Length: 337
Image (cartoon, rainbow, N blue to C red; front, side, top):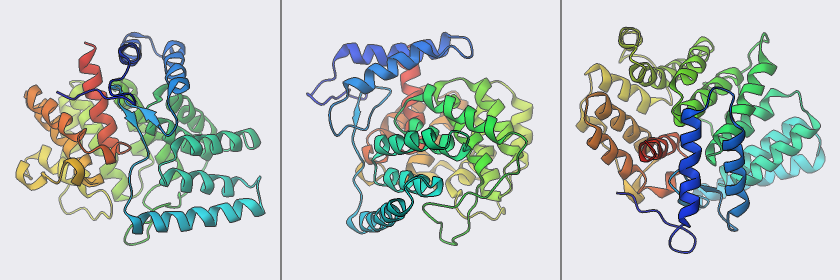
């Protein structure tokens, strides 16, 4: 089993109990009842030691991920470019957004949240700010705040023309594959999914699929949507969605998601998908491993699923990956049942 650690060797058990309480409340409260979990999150943030970005759903302290020197050098160069642009136009919303994004890429998620919060004070009607802050609240495990921000972003974009969102970390073809509204619904769906609210997740996923205009977006949305439908017992609808996925679809980024969908279809084997783990884990292997855990779960192998999710947590440098966050959520929800 996963060992709970802390900044003093062992996390105060009252904090672990508080984190567990947040999941109990999230699971048992009616929609919109977020006051208690918000209070829980606030108390945890106030008690975090310096240098800690988040406390995991299992009580671990999470510090900025280590980055290879060459990668960090590139990130720092772009961060400094964003700093210079912001110095020229400190109230410019685009400059503030890029400052927040470049800060987050360095693993400084709390600082990024502060930047977006300052920007919201200046530009309270700009949906992009809530979209990005919501994403980073998700990164630091503050699900209620993430959901509130992303719902606000959805309100602000309702009935408006969608727009392509520029990539902060461009893919190999330098082609953006997502839009503002896609990212709003995608991250909102994920926040609900991690919290175990699969009905709310599915509602957001349906909206996300409507604005998924690039094949990569379709594949990514379909992956989470299929798992959600299966967990809600919507077998026929899940199969119809799965049947729409073809191995020949041309994608740029969503390789892991496509491989997992093909595994669910029986067109990939377990051996095809197993990747590096532990300290060698990558974003893609973490993403894939979470899906493998769900594959075991859907086939009635709960112990195997938990074993895979436990192994994901050994790759601590990937703690901001959605697969890692989702694995944490699974194990935390299991612990409080």
